Length: 381
Ligand code: NAI
Image 1 (cartoon, rainbow, N blue to C red):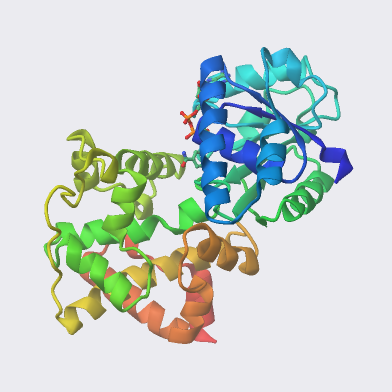
Image 2 (cartoon, rainbow, N blue to C red):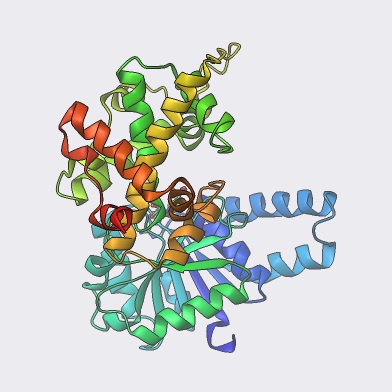
């Protein structure tokens, strides 16, 4: 797509350099800017190592490696972004710092240059509001590691031009990615629908129904999930996962369905982040504990988490957060779920899902266990 040949990337952290690699791999001219120039230099050095490993594995050849690296230029200043067709921002997750950056950029680039953010948690509409010309603003949310994860959420702001969504969709397809379109609401698609995977697991643990290893085993053994909730939280980092949960909860005006877990807060406060600190829900310096093999217990755990996930997916569909197809694709490609959740609900039958959630509501009388109206309607058909 010639209209997006010159790509500016701002922020050379793990996301910025990953996005630079994707654009460069697609033969775009990439300009990489970081407030700390040495971060850009370090990032390009790291990318070179990654590419050498890809050569060893036979995934790319030396010519490709050289072209990927040659396509990326490190910028001395923000002014170097002048000729960009599209700029993707991947700096620190702070609304006012991002707004300052976009205001500055608007005074440098042409009126046609598309400005995009990779934010995970800030409203795209609120960021767009800092621009004089907000119709060219859009969210392009990559997943980590960006070159490996194929899913990308495209999030138009209220102000975004409709055509831009189509153009970015086509561009990302051309880059070999799997784009989905999400409404600008907290957590977009994946980070919203996946919440119960963690929160219901934590709740089951807090209620002393099972330990971490057993809950993880239930989801893998019966559900065929690649990782259990606690393994995954340890992998993502408890601090990161807790921050996302907290921001989604606050953004939903404290809807109890998204309430963070006290356990996760404590693990995060203690510095037990997971793999990166060698200790999280599991102690990675010692042998990991083995799960219970009680099939009845495993089934109970799996079904409780599954119905809450299906409910969340159906509610996202009900509220028009994305199309059914995109909701299914997002969970399979964004977090490697073994099946689309809506399809899973159909397989199990919506009547069964509703009966399970209503049974939980009967016990707790908490708003957390309320069925999505769409789920209940489908169950009654
Ligand atoms: P990071 O902390 O690794 O890198 C951020 C980089 O931005 C740093 O090198 C920093 O020097 C630079 N920077 C900070 N302020 C700047 C400014 N005003 N101008 C230019 N450069 C500036 O962060 P990471 O993890 O790469 O995340 C970046 C963005 O991507 C955040 O908005 C984050 O929410 C989002 N994101 C992160 C994901 C993740 O798993 N890490 C996944 C999806 C989105």
